Length: 221
Image (cartoon, rainbow, N blue to C red):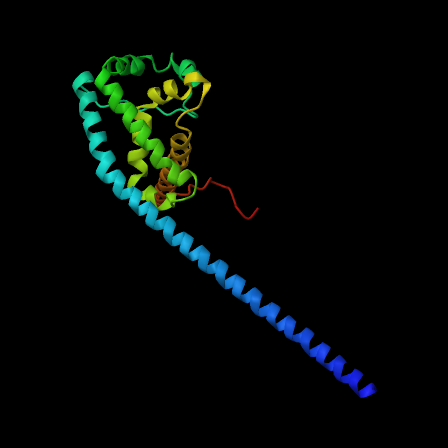
């Protein structure tokens, strides 16, 4: 009887050890699965970003070029850029006295129905494009380099339109566009400041300031 009890205890101990090993192996498999999912998600986000870049190049750029031509034909100049914080009607009113000259030039194109329709069409396309990146489905860093400047230029060139339409019916339209704009324009400004800082540091290193000693002054005293 005692021998049987000893055997049962050994079996119990071994089985518990076996469960422990199985548990460790299962945890290892879970980690591998999570890593695999992360790699596949990363790959898919890059592929989707590449698809959006190609879509922008094929569908958006020709429309932007045509819109710029329309603007020049009406105002005989390039579209002025203006940067707002949140692109709201309130900001537009607050800045009206500072940008009266720009607003006057832009008002001419607002009276052109064809121009208005073209701008709104592009604004809607930009919003649909932005959702992929603001929701994290596509990698915005992949798209930033080829598209960041063009994207921000369009938003700033049509900043008054965004301010007007974003507050219609007390709803903030184009939130995704403005969110992506803030990310990309902030990065553009940051990189420019870093480049400026690097250039300033280079110039500072080249400056040689002669040391003029004062007569009778002993630095060791």
